[in-house]
Image (tube, rainbow, N blue to C red; front, side):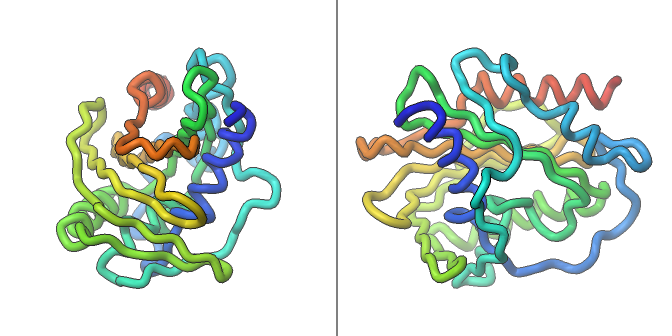
Length: 231
């Protein structure tokens, strides 16, 4: 897959194929994340990856043109946190989200997304707890529906992933939307009250058994976020 196509596919996969619902309640408490008062979106953009931050990858901005903006649904309520966190934003408690799509110029078909979301501190903790609870219940998989399109996720497995941050959780799955299954790897990291989501998917059609979020992406994104928090 060409780098540009992989970039677009990364964004489309996040919002259209890997999104789900189960809306939560209203945000709870003040925002204590990367932003200062009134500067949430701008601060997240400063902290997000830009062109040149990760050599060997072509980086796109936020939602690609024509991307799906609807609210998808999970077929199993217990699995909603896993599906929802792979959508346009982690859940309705996110105050702001900035996303990037990265297409590998060295590994054809490797598409990666990285997004940052601002939360209140209690809501950021709730998100991480909800993901761990869902992982314990959804190993057999789940399905999502968005605008009449179904996607299925099987062999959902929690996997360790060494990364900086206050806490993190990661898992793999086999995604099936149209055509052959594709391996997916998701890592969610909390740094303060900012939640960073990484997703890697192999869209080459070679049917590899696994895929991993490249550490060169995760490490540089989290380092940049930490500098922004400290700045």
